[in-house]
Length: 140
Length: 387
Image (tube, rainbow over all chains, first blue to last red; front, top):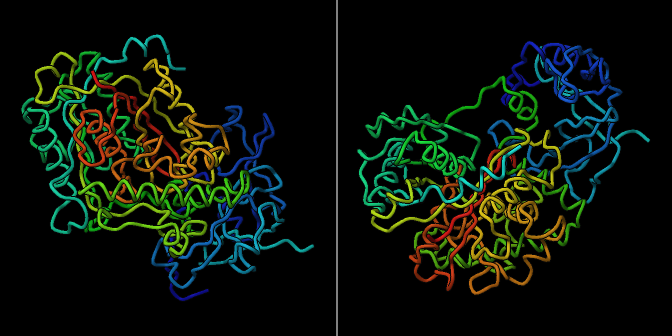
């Protein structure tokens, strides 16, 4: 962990405290609606599919597919100056939800990355209280 | 759902009587954003032959109408700070028409001013909002990265080479229009296809020249009743149709990365106006990125999904082409201070009035102006016509 972390950090909100707490434990959690059983990213106080208010937490298997990506060359924030080029991505989890993340553990080369390629979660512990779920190519 | 019959009754019930930019555009560290709002407001009122004292309704985005009204010294009786990104000001034109038709006001002023390049104190985002909480930590920050994510998905669905060629066509044709606009940032800088393909990467698949400019600029629009428009300096351009809406905020939550909300606002605006795509003489489509134009042409129904690359092939969107598009030079090559949407209306009105000089279209009776805001999040469409 770097002494000074200079990238934007999430400011957890009451409905997302559990999501971020679990991330520090190496767990990716999602909300599921008890009424219609659909999973959702990101945590809210309602189910946007059925308007249900009875939600429960479930642990994601942490596996999914690359839905789309961009290789970022110009840092959009000073904190990413040392990181470019990096792979910004949207990942579609096996539970059927899409979440923003980064792909790590592979060259930031458009020829190496394929939409639909299998990915698995890998947590990056960036501060004592925040771990970011990132994704790496899944072991075959 | 919108009541189309009532919208048809509303069609034509307001006129744009004044449009203008700030005194100058480009790199303006000596001017604050509110100074740019003010210059544009005074210039647009002058264009209309009206005074600040005539204004009884104020519309703006980015800044609060409280700040802008106080700075200008106006006390509006109708106030609308709808702020959904760069499309906001197109939406304001429609809101102004609705407010005027309902009797809330008679002279509506829409202002914009932004120091995208030189702002000493940009407005920060709420750090607890979902976007800052879930996307910013990954460096998914701001339009280039977000729109690039959408563009890569489009390439997956419809072909990377086709999309790339279309983006090059759009960048090059837009630059040709800018070369005809003395106010354009790139007025004196032509661009070849080779220069497009050699441009550095900002966020692959975007070259630098796939991305809009970042400038300091302001613009304003004055809207009033058709009756009062007859007494204005240049008469009025009629607001015939409108549509607005949004379907997400952050890019990862966009329901379909190849379908922005123009799929609803374009058809609605045209139906309200009682016209079809082929009736239009000009399309002013917010070009935050080359990809924005490509996907928007499809969403608005000018062509089908995945057909955009064929639609824009062979420079048909350039000067002299069969489909005049973004004749000011657009956000790509004329100006783009951050929320560019208002400038699509400014250029459409000028083309309809026949006052754009070297780039004037031979025939321009009907124009569509379309803004996209946020991260492909919101859209606003208006159809404008000569009275």
